[in-house]
Image 1: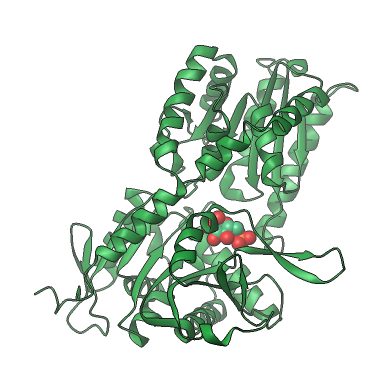
Image 2 (image 1 turned 60 degrees about the horizontal axis):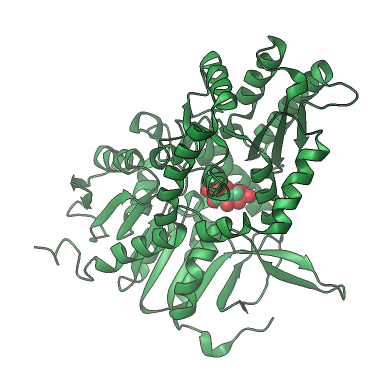
Length: 483
Ligand code: G6P
């Protein structure tokens, strides 16, 4: 695809995320192309993109490949190249072996390496430079997630005219954990370059503000942080919760599609029409509590609280970050447990656990949600967990029970779920049994309430609210401007 010269330096709205919202495909004629990826973020931002000369800066998924900018479905895409070393030091290293475990409450120990940090700075600058090349005067730039926390400050120092928003999709840890990070000051200052920093939960926002006070010279009042007088950034930084959501209408509509309904019936039939189908859908990640879930499920079968012939758990575990050591170990552990459960409880004609190390298109996921009686979300820590919300939106029929970890952002919005503490295996077993036995009218009462929540709070409301809050911040909202 060719660079469109007229678009140079002329984007009023720029989104920056580690990944572009496209997947590589091979066309029928053998040529390579891109197809929009199904994520909620791009769905939410598409209207804003189309109406405001929008561009998206991100990695295209290739290794060591330099690609020109190109247009796809009214969005201008600006690929940022990453080579093998960048991937290993910035992506697998600092992003996914330092920040990811630290921010998810050290479920596995974070590693601190100076070479990783150096590359993280360098790649954040590469993303920032790509934005600087295309952002129009006074443009709004929305930076996403933990891979790019230094970008707001880099943009602020180079271009004070920009309106800068940042959204963290994962949790922000308590000060006692965050304090481990050797580069804690730099990360906090990086984020504070934004006019508005959005988090999934109130606790994430207050953790961030507390860290700013403790580890930098910022002072805070309510949700606004003020830099110290000697800072080279003089913008105020507002930090508060903007919980992300899903494209509720699209999922609800798909759940009424006769083909998908028929596919759900077929899934049940092919599993031998067990009395109860339970479902888990996760990236294969140690934050998701898959081992805790399998432990509880295996024990329920062994102690015959659940009859093996009556139940089947479908566990979708989509491949993720496969070059990172802790993910390889997790895969081995999960696959060992799967073998133990199926070996002990399956018969020639019935499986108690169908483990699928694959990803599926949205339509097939909705069919699985519809086929399931109970969804198990047992994350040890999760910024939001959109699977929980999708399951609810797919159950406009009022059937089905959501078992949901208290340690997810989604638990704040879906209190009618059966809430569990995944660390408490006995407690979780009791809650799973409660879910399996819940009568239909109680299922319906809870599903309907949760669906009322999601009907209003969908992903476009999330992005509109965030961008409206960002727009309201006065251009002169600097320490000097506000006195
Ligand atoms: C989480 C993160 C995202 C990330 C996604 C997939 O949801 O918040 O930033 O894109 O996981 O992980 P990956 O490493 O494959 O991009």
